[in-house]
Length: 233
Image (cartoon, rainbow, N blue to C red; front, side, top):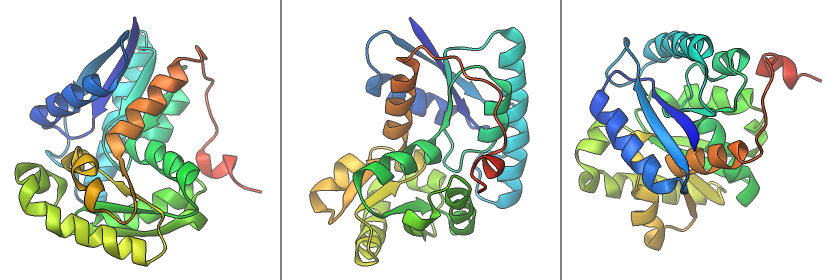
């Protein structure tokens, strides 16, 4: 049995349970997904300050995994991936985040991709993140709606028109692929694909698929340099 830990960097346990349930439906047989909720921080991350604090908390959770014996892989199920690089430096197993996984999948499916997510503060944060992982030249923009992910999750039907409008604008701006990022938008890709002018990706589905694929190699990782050092010329 392959054990994968899913970390919710928010403190809302109901969100953890929702993502674990969805991830278990997406994972193949023989994969056990265990949910872990951040013990402190924001109920929902929607500011740079909350994201920075979440990164510190995720690092602490990774340290605890390293001490107790890590699972076979770790998924950071918070779009924007707080603590991703710090956790990778600590753990000898694959560590993936929603944004990192979905951006790499998008880059394999189209020449340019865009991100649609909830909460205007995420725009500059995600642009900086995509630059950091070396895919900035492939990004056709980050498009946000005013509703944050927790509010989208509370009323998905009410948010669909807003999300679809941003998908259409992303396509007009040259995106072949659009990532629907964050826990609040889980399931939107399936519902909106029939009306979408672009390929749609669910960020949780990308995270689960890539994590399961990497665990299939049976590799152990090693402590890594910072991503900025790794991609410097």
